Length: 210
Image 1 (cartoon, helix red, strand yellow):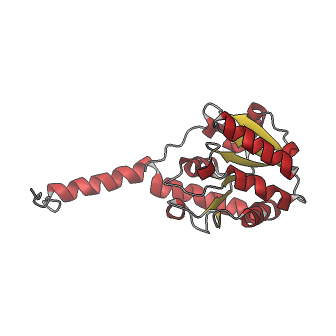
Image 2 (cartoon, rainbow, N blue to C red; image 1 turned 120 degrees about the horizontal axis):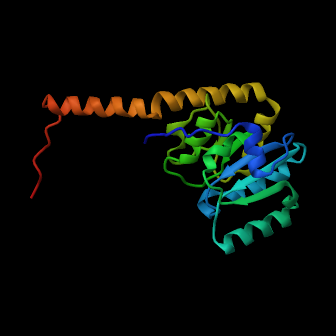
Image 3 (cartoon, rainbow, N blue to C red; image 1 turned 90 degrees about the vertical axis):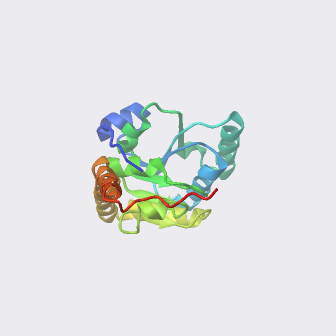
């Protein structure tokens, strides 16, 4: 997987683009509003964050039924006034700088591009440790929580809010790991190494069974 780091807007410009006040503590979530991505888990975490003055910024599309179900859930939980529904935002990777923390609440994942985009933007991350997520981030670079655990997710968000300096250190470490392991340069180096191995005869293919 190669991560391409797109130029981001500065914080104020990103917030203007999303219509978010400068002073808000913003929890960003980007993805399809579908069951496997777990936006409902983030909504369920909100009642556990009543003491944190935050705004949820949801970027992503879904079917009409999915969106209606999530909005109804937010109303039932009494958290609708804390959520901004942005829909699909073109070049969304440019507005991650509007976030104080980026949340990945998925039930299942491969290698989430959302994480690479948040790492590139230098935004603290709280993510469920599912699928390929632990291959991209460790506890040194993000707060990792269990899947389908709203209380744990809320605790991770609260940790970022309460300990901004530690969250910023993790975000810097994540950015460095992105550049070191997932940028174009390291990928080309690995590809060149495989090519050298093959040209030296070390990569001869085994006979193919009939």
